[in-house]
Image (tube, rainbow, N blue to C red; front, side):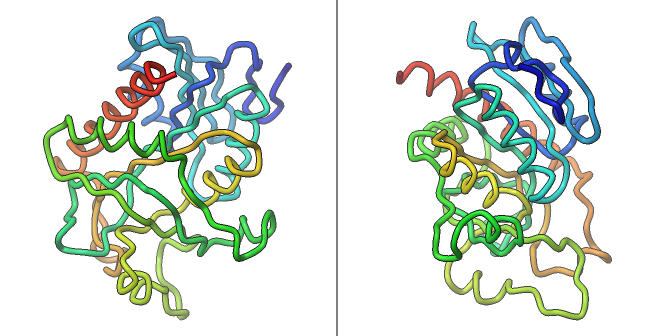
Length: 242
């Protein structure tokens, strides 16, 4: 079966998938695998397949924001993917979890517009428990701070005249904010597959990002490297637990 937006054949996909925003990060992830093939590069969706310890893994970029990412998730699931792990970056809500830390998302606050068109507002966006366990264990095997907890998914990156809801979610105990995890978890629940996410913190969520955002630091690069390694290791753990 040909997937019309990803522009790949479903028979070429592996059931485990690592998804990320940046097409060039997808390439970087693929370089950690064996027997890698690039299947397509269509719009923001760049697709690779390879292996780690003999386990086939799909790697796909999904771009920025929930709507475009949701298209990627839906097509991967339609193509036979049964476990999706997002690796990405996020803004921290606490100085106790500074840039360079990793966060495994156990659930996501649905502060984006996409999922309210799919399910009622009261429906939770929750990660698969086995995927969370595998990601957290794998991340703890790397050097550096690792936390797990609730993340927030927003649509807007730069502030406008409306106030972002950072303060109330920070007070409620959310750890970090990003732009796609809620969509991933809701779609995974709807379609009956497993999903989880790990993010590298690249700044503080309540800062004026137009003025201070700079993800291109050694600290952030090191955290991204760690989360990629953790995602691959987590897939190996999940496969061993079958």
